[in-house]
Amino acid sequence: MVLVSKSEKRQIYQYLLKEGTLVVRKDTGLPKHQDIPVPNLKIMMICKSLKSRGLRRKNSTGNGSIII
Image 1: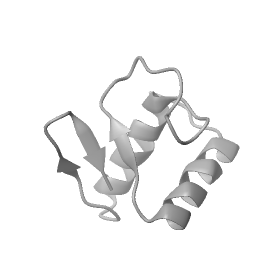
Image 2: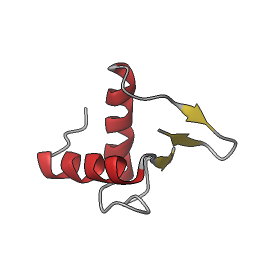
Image 3: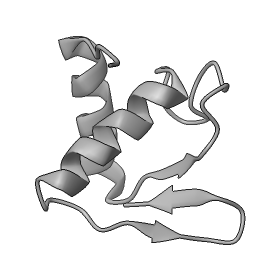
């Protein structure tokens, strides 16, 4: 289980609302996301949570990315 703080969630949601899409590499070892100063694993878990609630779509590309 990964604990995501409220401030990290806020940064992710603000970026998503501002840009409209979010590209996440399926690499849990990345220390930070390329656009958001939050660990990549936490962004992946937020995306997984949004998908389970039916709030986003998951599209996989050839390079192993998730686009929401």
